[in-house]
Length: 87
Length: 238
Image (cartoon, rainbow over all chains, first blue to last red; front, side, top):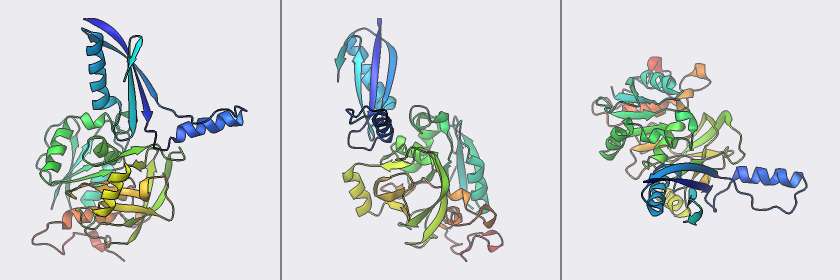
């Protein structure tokens, strides 16, 4: 067993309006950052997961996302274990 | 007299209003703490408004795992009536007892103000005393009230008459198809973002919401179809 640092990124579904991202985009434009577009805002969770292997930590973290951390109706998620990324 | 269980989560704040509104309609209403595992022979379950678990993670996301929710899901599965108001609606969506989800209001602000909703479906335990097409004034108080569903589910809800209330005049939160409340396929589980319990008496500024609670009593009444137990007739339509 070792402890894996797992990072979960939860984002609003691409097809859905993200009013927070839009407000941030407008604020950036107002500050003169005219080059920015498509700002979207989500959540970043950092977990420490005890598991035998990296893959097990990934599978458990995904189960956590499916059960609780993300809402499958409104959100998508990515999970990153240790240094590498997996979807 | 229906037995109405009003579930209390940590952070519920419309539980007393819901209890009083149900009692005003003649129900035998009582509180059930979210850690309880029995509904004590409830006929109807009400999940009240508020901010269960501080809305942490997502509104309703943590409350849906409260121990009582197993009993609520079983009650719904066997056809028992369930009403979720505001945060209760969010919890029912998170629990998968209603389709869709509720996201941040399109214009981001928390809104506490009257809205106008049209009754679209009267064949539910909470709207059977309304007439289809009636427009009601009922207030909202929410930050995460934008009801969203994928296009296919939205079309299915529309085609099968499962949109129960729809915002008219203006849509306060940007919800899909101006939806303010929906029901499940069995039409026994209903969710609504506005607060009918805040408009059940003239002293509260109106009584357009009273028949949500009177409907619970009237529904399936075998001997007392006309007896809706209005107090001094003040719930009757004027």
